[in-house]
Length: 562
Image 1: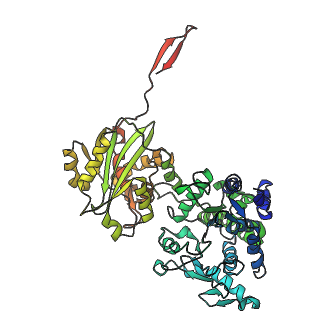
Image 2: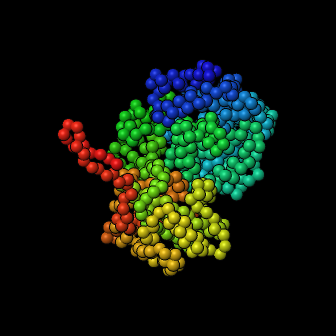
C-alpha cells in the first residue's frame, strides 16, 4: 500500500484534497476512496515508478509547458499500476471529464508523444485520435508535430508529415481520424483516443476503432471530454460506469462482468448553485489557478451570463461540466428517467392494465403492464423486435443487446410479429396478475383486438394525438418530476423515454413525438401512455392494514395492526 500512497504525485494530490488546498467535487472524493480501499490495498498490484517518472520527465524536455498536479496524478495510473501475475495494466481505459479550458488536449499531446518513444518501450504502438471533425481531431496531432519541428534533436528520430508522425526506432505512428467509421477496419492500435465524445449519439465509430484493440501490448483507450447536450450516448454510459465503480458494483476488485478497468477522473460542480461561488469553479476546472488567462476568460463569461440568461446553459455545460437541460420540451430529465430503475415491478398486485403499441409488425412491438403500488406507478414492458428492423435500420444496437441480456426484449424471426407472440405474453402474465383490460389505439386494435378478445381479455381503445396527450401531460410530468414512476432496470424503456419530445402546437396543446423517425424507437413509451388513460380504473395495491381498538391495562385504547 505504501508504494502508492508514498509516491510523491499521488501523495501530493491526496494531501491537497485533504487540506483543501485544491477544491474537488464528490467524484474526486469517491475516486480517492476507491483507490485507497480497493486498489492500493491489493497484494497482486505493483507500482512502476520509473515508467511514471519517464512519462513526466522525457516530454518535459521538449514541450513548452509543464504538467500540473492533477496531470501528474493521472500519469501514475496511465503508466504505473500493473498486475504482478502478468505485468499488464490495471487500468487501460481513462475517462477525463472536466470543463473546457483545462488543457485536456495539451495533456493528451504530451502522452501521445511519450507513447511513441523508445522509453515507452513498445514497438508498433500506433495511436489513433478520433473526433467528430477533422479540425478537432488534428489539434493534438499538430501539437506533437510542432514540438518535433521546433526541436532539431528530434527530427532524426521521427518521420513527420501532415497526416502521420512515426518514430523511426519504434515504428509507432500517430494518426488522426474523423468519425467516418468505414475507414477504420483492420487497424492494430496501441491506443485509441476519443476526443469530445459528448457529441456521440452511438458507438458506431468507437466500436470499429476498438475492434482491433488488444493485439498490441498495453492497449489503452482515452476518453477526453467535457459534458454536452446528447443524452443516452457513450458518455452517459461511461459516467454511469463510473458511478457503479464508486458505489462498489463494478471495479478492478470484481470478477466476471462486474470487473472494470476504467479509471474515471471526473471534475464538475456538485450543485448548480455553486456556479455563483467562484471558489467552487476549481471543482470543474482544476487548472484555473494555474492559468490566469483561463480564469479571466471565465469571469468574463460569467459576467455576460448575468446579462444574457441564454449563455448560462453554455457556461454550466462547457465550463462547469454540469449540463442544465432545457426541460420545456423534454418528456423528462435524464436524472428522472434514470431514477425509474430504482424499483422493480412488484411481485403481487391486485390488478393491472395491459398495454400494446407498435408501428409495424416488421419493426418493434412493445407490450406492458401498468400498476399502482403504495402511491407509486409501475410499468414493465417487453419488446418484440422483428429481425428485419435491425438489418434495415440504423438502430442503436448496444441498447438492443443490453435489453436482450436483461430479458426485456426478444428477436422475432419469420414474416412478421404474429399476434400469437403478443397474446401468449399476456396469457403468461395473467397467470400472476389480474389484467383488468388491455389498452391500445385504433390502428393496433384492427390487428390484435379479435385475437386478444378470443383469448378472454377485455380490450379498450384509446385515442391518440394531441387531445389525449394534452390530457395526460400533467400526469406524466408529475410521475417523472416527483419520481413516482418505476420501470425496473430496463435499458430499452429508458431509451424509449429519451427518444420522445413534446411538440407544442396550436391551442396550447402538446403532442408527444419521436425525436428522429427511424433510428430512435418510442414504442415502449407510447405503450405506457396508452395505459395511463386507465390508471384511475385500477386499485392501488398497497398492503392492507387492519386496525382494531382493544382496551389496555390503563383503561385506554390502543390500536392493533394485523
